[in-house]
Amino acid sequence: MEQVAWDELLRRMGELRDFGGVVGLLTWDQETFMPQRSADGRAAQLAAMQALIHERVVDPRLGELLVAAAADGGLDEDRAAMVRNLGRERDRAVKVPPALVRELAQAQSRAVEAWRAARAEERFSIFQPHLERLVELRRAQADAIGHAGERYDALLEGHEPGMRVSRLEPLFAELEKALVPIVETITAAPQPARWNYASQRFPVDAQWDFTIGLLEEMGFDLTRGRQDRSTHPFTDGIHVDDVRLTTRLTEENPFQAFFSTIHEGGHGLYEQNLPRAHVRTPVGSAASMGLHESQSRLWENMIGRSLPFWRRQLPALRRLFPAQLEGVSPEAIYAAVNRVERSPIRVEADEVTYNLHILLRFQLELALLRGDLTVADLPAAWNERMRKDVGIEPKGDREGVLQDIHWAWAEFGYFPTYTLGNLYAAILHERLERDLGGVAQVIEAGRLHAVRDWLAEKVHGVGHRWDAEEIVARATGEKLSAAPFLRYLEAKYGALYGVAL
Ligand SMILES: [Zn+2]
View 1 (cartoon, rainbow, N blue to C red):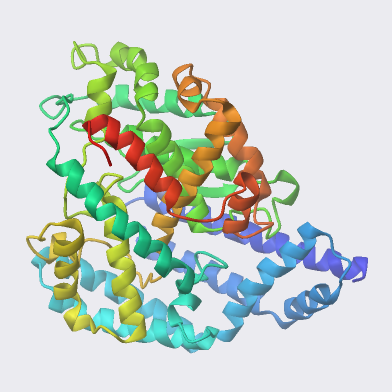
View 2: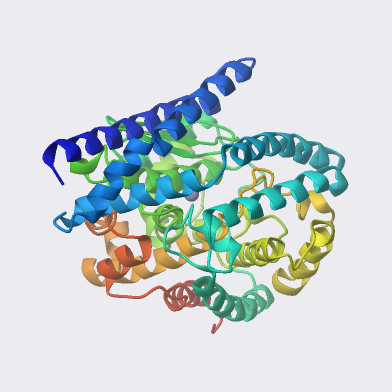
């Protein structure tokens, strides 16, 4: 393709990324510092920006440029990936009629209101007609986008490009089959001695100082990013040089802040180490939600919830909380932050039971999309699966089917990315162990920069040149499977609980 045409395409790509950054900044502000009564103005600004982005994405001229570029066999690998990624995004946007987009947006905001009311009154029936409408609209959207007989694939593609239900189903079935007896054995085992911190208070200023220290040790660059507070922690990659994290501070449980910071710090490192040369192109972003989540979970669970990590951190923690930590050992902290129990709430679940919560959601939303399950039957189906898989009966719909906001946002196909994140993390972690020659020693010596550098080279710096599964395969030589994650759980929890798994 001619240089002048390529330059125009590149300019349009750059502009779309900049608009995306503006949306990110508006959203970050909304969740952190925006005054309480400013919501209507912000909603209008965000809608205007989204409309502008949509307009530019569906612009026929962009379509022409992408077609011309795709026909050019001489593009290098990076350019070919830019064209492929933006082409896929444009294709999805063009195929969905504007009336359906508007209807979805309106139905979503009404559904969120109804979901809040349904939770407050613990009455699923308030939410039910809204969820029925959202399922209907998403089915229509999936059909508009197109699929090979599995509507869910069209939605999954929006979060996990390249992934398919036919790939997930056997993978998740294998995981489920292995997890149920593991949970059985661990919950029947004698409990290890753990630090009981629940009766104490932890001043939030000292917690804040500790979390900043953690980010520095992880190698998060605070001159190109910052941390603030929010109710629900999140990461917002506005630009490679402007990455915003939030954490959540409560006096009762300092681990909420510590693990939120480590988790979001893992996401933040991904954003800070994306390929600088491609920062304003469709290659300069993360490859998928699942791969993003693999970064946060590798840091939070495999590093932050390890024994060497707490051996390393205890002296600093003791300086900040001397009275609370009197006589507390790293082993007691380690046992406290890795307690396995059957619990109804996903976001409070430990890493052993967590995926069972996700598999349940995946199976139910797949059944809804396929038409094998009605929304009216959803609460009963939820409770039955909880009993069967997690081994616990929710006390009501608030700690059952109404616990997550995702379905009120019409997010179907998002939940599986959490489990994919755990699986990818374990594959990367095994390779990291081989390449660094002992991650435990690296963590205990406080050399977390070595972990960051490895991930930056193998994952972050690749951007979206390939899809997630290929990035992980090239980094590790391994295909996506549940085996490394299961090996990780068996080794860690077998030793902690003194059982053979
Ligand atoms: Zn996350």
